[in-house]
Amino acid sequence: KAGVTQTPRYLIKTRGQQVTLSCSPISGHRSVSWYQQTPGQGLQFLFEYFSETQRNKGNFPGRFSGRQFSNSRSEMNVSTLELGDSALYLCASSVDSPYEQYFGPGTRLTVT
Amino acid sequence: GENVEQHPSTLSVQEGDSAVIKCTYSDSASNYFPWYKQELGKRPQLIIDIRSNVGEKKDQRIAVTLNKTAKHFSLHITETQPEDSAVYFCAASSRGSQGNLIFGKGTKLSVKP
Image (cartoon, rainbow over all chains, first blue to last red):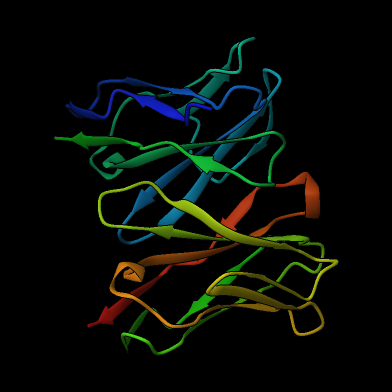
């Protein structure tokens, strides 16, 4: 099976802009979780979608949002970007969270 | 909410030695404990996991042990090799099977040839 894919791999944005990141899960996986990874805070959970419904949400501001489509592909959006949003954004797919999550390669977002 | 503490933050061993990384968790409802390996510039890779109804699980040179009473679990790597050098993350499920994963801060393992 093909692994989890994420696009784009790298992004450079300016403060105040918005960004959309995409995640395609492993075929047959209905759960997609998103994480933010930074050197200081490690891996922090953003939210999880299962069958197009957000089931869990982490402790991030409302500027971070997401959605999932009927084919299980997921997108996350960050509005009004801040410098502190610079991070590696990882998605992980599984048959059903939290079990056996497989990560994508991540999108490296740099906010200038 | 769930909190996961991981120790040590860095670990250096000689090739062939064993390495042990320990994690503690706070939520007694946690029932799933995976370990991930992340090499520099790469995605986290699931290397082994354990569920709360099992005390120990082994896969070749790696093993994980779980002590539910003490709320801690450990990763054991035997006969370490230079390619084991990476950052290792433990995680625990919050709110049992209804929640998400909470990760420890990671352990940077260096295996010296």
